[in-house]
Length: 194
Image (tube, one colour):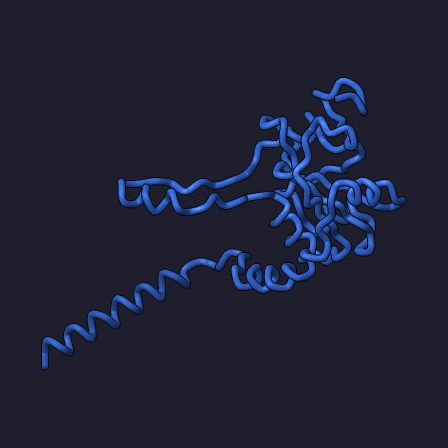
């Protein structure tokens, strides 16, 4: 009986210490539950707003629309879709988005690295391949498929979360030499020249 009581008291002390440690600092302003809820809302909304390149380009020519590039400043300055505005994904706030996107009704067109092929330096495909471990793990990993880590997804989710619902996403893999699209930036000789 005494040993059971001793074990119970030890467990209570450990639990109290663990609880005290968790509450010893203010929690971060992070909510995985909020993000999961947002993802479930965005999924159906996004599904009807995936557009091919021709539609994307036609929409980009409409007055008041914004083509938004959320890649790093370095990559944006090197090459981006002609006329695109830039805001690094890591710099998203209500204020910074308001500076780039004038109203919640503005048509916003987004693209990312995973929309382009033919320049793996500036448009490197974001993909996570299974990591093999021991030989048994390697056999299972070989059966897994890569996970696409495209910046379009978090960009779309965050724009939606900040209140922007008129967002469209390029849903086509485009070669950088495709004559339909023009780029600008420090590595582009002349606008319209490939």
